[in-house]
Length: 272
Image (cartoon, rainbow, N blue to C red; front, top):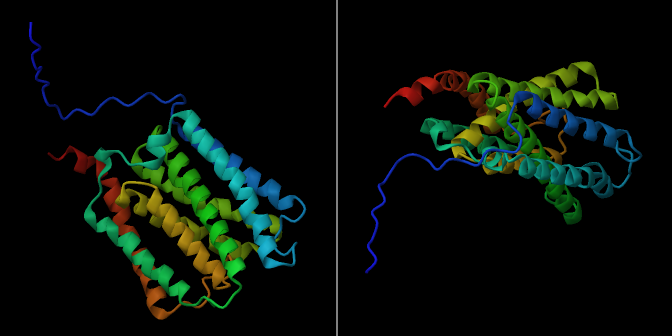
């Protein structure tokens, strides 16, 4: 008897995803971020962990950023893999498509970054710039993985998208209040908390526009590298060119329709 071809009916239904080992919840996401912040704080209090504890800037950045963040990056990646959240952390579901105008956020933010990069003294020691690049990449990787990755995934398991978005922004800003541990003044620290909360909204929009976390990590890395390499402090954006500052203002204006767009997301999904 000859074999016969079997026609498989086409379907638009997605293949069921494997159930995660750990159900995504906002409490789990917050627990991971708190553990991250605790590890950072503990390391800051250890010998050599504070900025300025080591005279050589290259060795200092290796100690305060590259070493501890390498360990934290591994721990975060292990958690994401073990929990079964890998796909949700790294990629947006197809049903979470956003309007094309959201691409304005990565495009305009690149202009802001370019403005800060234009202030960098590229005559600095190549070794220092290389260590700076590795350290700031790890900052972008770990913060995005923890906030726009794990925390957002957990919040989505408990809440709708708008409160999940606000939570990631507020927590991202609050994490930078840890600078008070180093004796940073309260006023400038509160300003930094507000600014980083706003930047959290930009990184969220970048993730959603790209449909994946990688672009948010890349822009976060470039932004931090530009600030450090230009010698800007944690609480100051330095003196970027006018076009860079205006681009940042434009992002502030765009954040208003961003919130409206997130609020209307469920409505858009119901439109055939």
